[in-house]
Length: 258
Image (cartoon, rainbow, N blue to C red; front, side, top):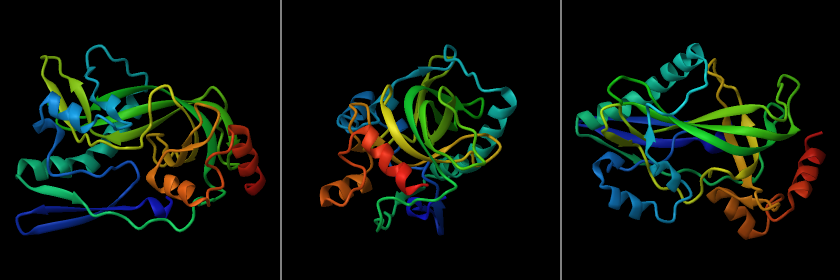
């Protein structure tokens, strides 16, 4: 995993502190959980956030999970170990805080082991791990439009779908109750229907999910930086990708990834 995506979280409970270097699937959280906020408060917090769509209430009984049961079981087990500490801290009235990270010194961290693709956000699910809906994660499905580059060990093809998982979600339980958990507004985030130039890593474990290392929104045919780090490089005038047409960005990447 690209080290520039390592994030530090500090969890505190009584006299115990635990520092975790989390993967890019984890986002910054505050000690005020989304479940403790009213719908109006959530709407206000997410008013200008790219991930406002995550406030959509997904009906558990009507959503359709097309992932094979054995693969879903592997993904659930993986996320159980990641998410249970959050619930344990909450249940003990503890808190967590995002400590920040070191800004990257390079825009592109190119390695031959990672693929570059053009993908479109197709649909998403909110997956409960336990019958009480205490542990949730959101799974985004992307459709591959074009493979820009991939290592020899990879077998990505246009038309193929890939999944990426993120902590938390908002879901309607069979009894009608709504659970909102681990939802934090993000200025930059994946958006349904949008198309991205994306650097991906994976699949990283038997569950077959991928990780996004970098991304530009190319829905308009122009590469628009879609993370705070990439926006910073664009504003400084040092970006190799931002502002280029999609085809220009692809041509540049293929020239440096030969």
